[in-house]
Length: 284
View 1 (tube, rainbow, N blue to C red):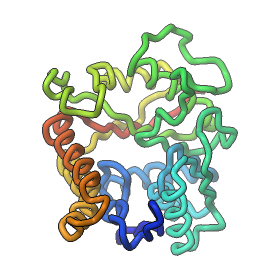
View 2: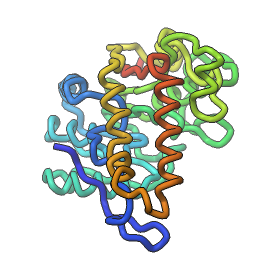
View 3: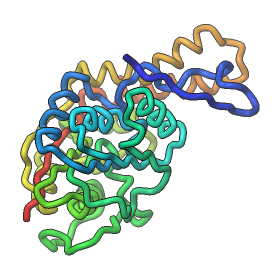
């Protein structure tokens, strides 16, 4: 069942005048329900009492984990109020509202840890301050200097996560990686200012995790069909709206945005950008 989006107004127009927002997506990323079930089973098997979801969006993975671990309570942190409201509605509909909080606040230096399970899927940047560094307690594992770019950002995010998980707990770290080095033409087609050092190879992501004080329990990567389902679902609501609202005042700008995003995927990062799901064990 796909969760529905909430009400919005833009320039005084009700949500019935606007394209629906991401109603075709169960998860805000390339994650199948089958893979999510495996991840949840692995994490719930630890019988966690507390779950912290960094950059949670509407928190679907956290809600699934709370259903699988009935003794657990969860906290989800995000800056998008619409997504958080959707998460609260979904939690209420599944009888979970008394066991979960959705908080609209920054995750940088968050006081809402440590937790037995920490979810951070595609949201490592939420742990970093404007200078690209994380605010976290405890000594940094390894103590080695890092270079600017993706290695520094990934390492800092992982160090922050290390301070947010309890001994014996688990971190699920979802992180982008280059499946191969992108060509200049592919980079030019991606997001504005895309660079070859925006992401690491997968092996470097895993090595950054061990340098930050973890052991890697499991590595999974999103498949091509998961990416296609996500990218298609990401645009499907708006594409359907555009087909029947050609004369709408927002149609031209919406069409430009959607066409630019589709081209960025198909001409830029398709089969180049991957997403890894690393289950991490903190070293004690």
